[in-house]
Length: 326
Image 1 (cartoon, rainbow, N blue to C red):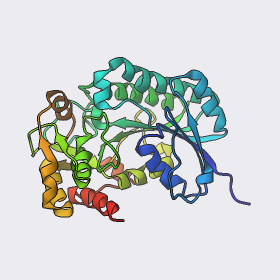
Image 2 (cartoon, rainbow, N blue to C red):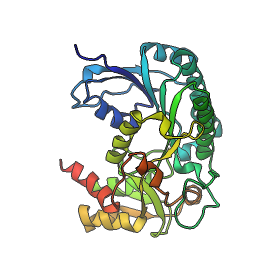
Image 3 (cartoon, helix red, strand yellow):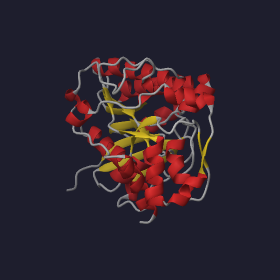
Image 4 (cartoon, one colour):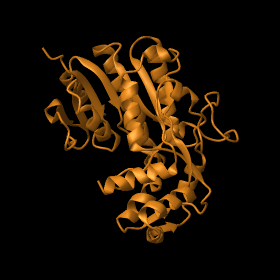
């Protein structure tokens, strides 16, 4: 007899990372997914076991919907919490960020404690928890997060709540501090870092992308969709005892990449003619957010935990452009 599939909920499943993970898990008969978002999620095309996915449209801020959602997943093996207001959107609307990025996650965690004590929780935090003053060079595990934006502050609030819930045995949790994921397919988002995908994606469609600062040496910490997908699956199956009970964050590995390196890779793999679609135009609000983030983060700990990382800016861009020709 085949084993019973493990029930896994993915919130924010109408975004980018949810379908990325679902594509991987639905190629494995050992998982049954409940995909939920404010808009009706779509089961990824081309997966081997689409029948193992259920979609639920609803407001994760609504306690009645949360109750229905959790009841549909009985018995629940794990939940990926991906929903949220992104960086620039959080800065523009503090109350919306508080409601979605803090309150809804807190209420969801408390409901999980009551219904499924000890369940595996993977929370999507962000390296936006880091802000100035940052040490010169690489940010290590010893650097205290000092977020300078609402998005990072609200992520850090939730990380602290998760740390204590895990320590008390209410949940079995990891908080993943994501780098900027590049190159994302699709459309621009409300993230301050959206252009770091757009400056490759849009020129490849013959469309303009605005780079919101005039500094080609500016560096960001990036990871590819493929590496992120692999690392999510590895954390799903990771031994919870690998981290201290009160420190549950992992800095997801990435590579430090400059705007110039991305431009060079675009020209190399997409063609020199694509550079004409890049428009460098300072946006002071976005630049302030971007410059508050760490340009490079030490990957020693996550690599010891068994996570993987990309090789270079070239590899990130080539992966995306190759996917367009697949």
